[in-house]
Image (cartoon, rainbow, N blue to C red):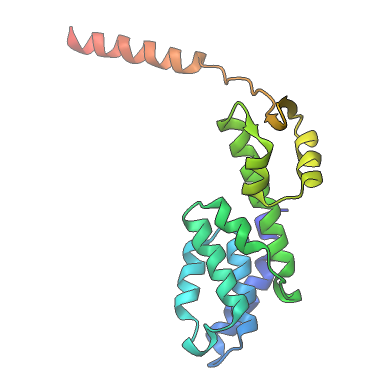
Amino acid sequence: MHLNKYSEVVERLENEEFEQVELGAEVYQQLLAIYLYQNKLADAKLLWMRVPANLKDDKELIQLNLLNIALQNNNYADFFKHVKYEWSERVKSPVEDLLNKQREELFKLMGSAYVSIYQHNLLELSLMSEDELKRVCAALNWTEELDGDRVILKPKVQEAPPTRGNDDQLLKLTEFVTFLEN
């Protein structure tokens, strides 16, 4: 899945918005969902501001705006809470793609930031079922350990990137500063 997946749809919807005076909530829903998937959070916020007041009562638009707010605040818990909604067919595909992308990002972040995490904490954060979480963890080569009756998940240890380049740059910088001081 890459970001150009919905580019033609976005172009068509943006043209509709510019050309027509009154649009239905459907156009705004689709455009907002795709902006969120493409991580164009500023565009999504500006679109919300352009939505006519009479359409801001639309439940799906409100839900999409809550997703935008959660993404802007980097609040995974709120994002996963608000994404659990019966989406219409118009926005179902981009929202599912967004959900998958956010879950990938969450696990990448957890894998690099934590040495271990309790399974119940990750379940609570990601709002996944235990079976889904086990499949994802197995695919990422995470290991499980027991701490009494609680399960601890341990991400695969990532190798530290080589720092030789930084050391070389620091040495050159030191030599240059020494040269300037003499």
